[in-house]
Image 1 (tube, rainbow, N blue to C red):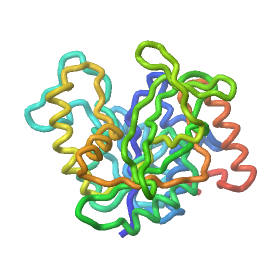
Image 2 (image 1 turned 45 degrees about the vertical axis):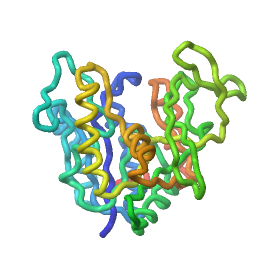
Image 3 (image 1 turned 60 degrees about the horizontal axis):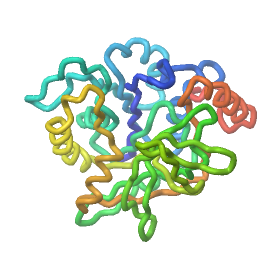
Image 4 (image 1 turned 180 degrees about the vertical axis):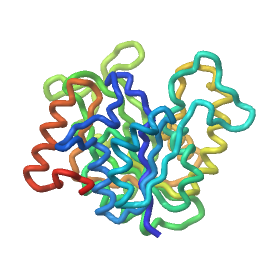
Length: 302
């Protein structure tokens, strides 16, 4: 059975200021996620699952989904604030989506095979999908589930236009993942990369540090884990208006409890994305360059 591609496209893009998951970045109106789907299908993936909001359904299918429905089986999953376990109402004032782990949990009935979970607005590169596809085609068996994460060098994931947040990975033997440490306000000054802690103090980070860009490889064994962790999250932080149920934190907690194993897969592919509006021109230029070099067709869905 071919692995599926699950694309998280329900975010609100607060720093970017718009719905970048559907925005034209490449020639002929291609969005970044069009390149991800193209790469995934070329790398042995089958079904495509879009996680979106219901209010985006018509526009998303018109601008994105219809282009791919003739190329692969396509499913649409809706990540709504009201989609919660029984007994948990949406707290007053909540507007922000519940986060990436909640998005993946929302797809639990649409996925019954190994799958990749990615952000809609990140360009990961063909090599990343090939590496992850090979892992998902032959997932290791053992006493506990083994998942995967494609790791990128920190220096390749920064923005020239502002700080970023990244999950910095602590690796063990055989590139096993031991821990994901969330660092915020990461910036580069000259050749130096640093992050700021809660008190505004600078701490250095190595340019080759491995970071998570939310490119994960899972099996359906993830969903029972998310069931339990979502209930815990809602009990402890569900009333906070901006709290988020995030997949790196779920993975990190499960690793600490020795409930799962995660392999960190290296990639030589170049990541790029649009964190800020000013990043758009650079992304567009890069996609034009890749098209001119014939790395991608002018219409990735063609």
